[in-house]
Amino acid sequence: MTLSDRHPIFVGYKMDGSLRRRLEALTGSERKYIAEDGEFLRILRLGEDGYVGKVVTERITTDRVDDIRRNVLSILQRLSPDTRFPIHLDILVCVSDPETGPSSWTPAP
Image 1 (cartoon, one colour):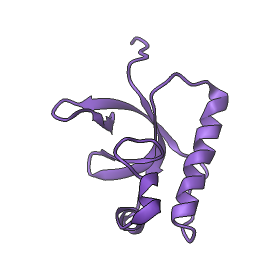
Image 2 (image 1 turned 30 degrees about the vertical axis):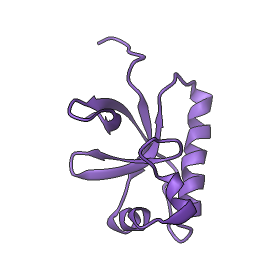
Image 3 (image 1 turned 180 degrees about the vertical axis):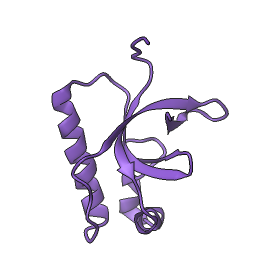
Image 4 (image 1 turned 90 degrees about the vertical axis):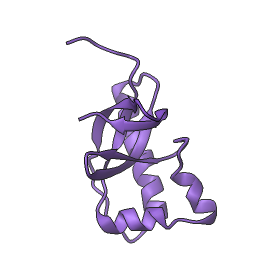
């Protein structure tokens, strides 16, 4: 095993069907929070499951992980105030989809 600083990480969690539908139905100014460019949050796939969270491309320290977690949960709470979100989020490595390139990061299995 070796270390790599070339793969982004994803901080987020597995969505249920109702949250997925809510996020896919966003319109107007709310739509900017879930975008392909990943400025805020992104929806990615791991097998058949959809995950929502933030892709982090730069190196981070452990103290930044909690900042990112709070940011992800804050945005989700704003977009879906009636939803209960988990306290703990998953951290996954992302790999580029060979067919679509780095603009379509997918959490690594």
